[in-house]
Image 1: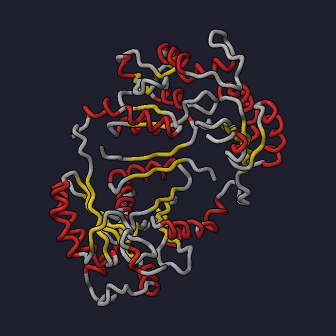
Image 2 (image 1 turned 90 degrees about the horizontal axis):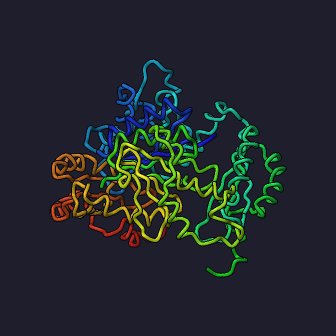
Image 3 (image 1 turned 135 degrees about the vertical axis):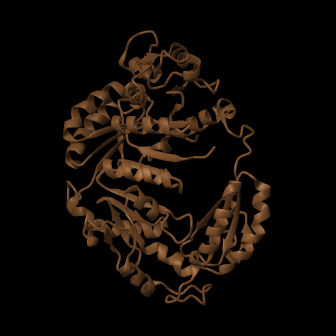
Length: 244
Length: 244
């Protein structure tokens, strides 16, 4: 998968609606993070529903799972799942989900982690709504892997390889060569990157692509022309420069 | 100033064009970071010029400043500013800037830091193009302050105040009160935030606004209803919970 864009926006309905509509139309997969808790500033479900003209509908299975998996909070001793209260209405907001009657329900609501009641609502076929708490976000995103793999152009998920070359030359001295190289290797799916390192004596050149063997076959040529050396991590050969 | 959106995008012409056009139209001020170096993957000037149908024109003063302020690189001993070479052409790419003949030039090219040759090109009246190197980005952004202050709704720049309240209650228990509070204080320009803290015993409620005295006048009420306490920094009162 190629990450095309990251957007950080505030809890503002019109901002969320604009971003989610545009990204849903433009990209294969969109993941949102945050804004799906029980308080007034959690407006993600509502805003995304509005963006696609969908109603919010109580997801009964998610609510049943919430009741089953939630531990009672020590500071909420009188909470009763079966009696209307402000606290119950707040919890219900977390399982009232954008629902499209024209699409199969099991494609709209995923439960990737068996021990979590938090659903992943999938809106407009590709917008995946996840919580912002980092541990939950990561766990659910990992849990989505089996749903996403079959849709990938490279379902084996071999991923991206990267070769890193450290060069003592200034960027302007390697620019012409790298431009020529980038054009030559582009048909092989290789991207050439050049990263200045401010206040350091060596800059970084990268080769990124799916074909690791090909990357490694061109690396010696690049090392030669940029008078560089292969490194595993940017900056690992800084120590021979003396103190700064 | 209210930060409305942060977007992280790749070195892709169509992505840059889409983002910069949309944000220039939608927001008062846009700042870009990165992609203005001498190598082939530095395509920000070119892409933004294309987004607004502008030519790239050599900025002679910036080039003169570059010549004057650049130190010779130890690994580029034969570099000659007065003779055509691939390295000179690479450097020139950094001072060939999107230029709108219909606008005053001194509004399109700012030099906020006297000791830096890097210009801040201002395209379409509000897109400020800055380098990605963090130290340079920060220095130039700070340098823009005098240009931006007169355009602010609050030119004294008193900024935003924040009151932080730690609460032992779960979000669902405070949701109804916070919703009522948020609606009540919204006309006073106050935003109420609620942030769950996963794996911690206390959550965070925030009051954010320009009128610090007003925020402090409502804080005791909020402390009372969420059974909380005022803190300076989120989590500072975690230590009384024992080890996790």
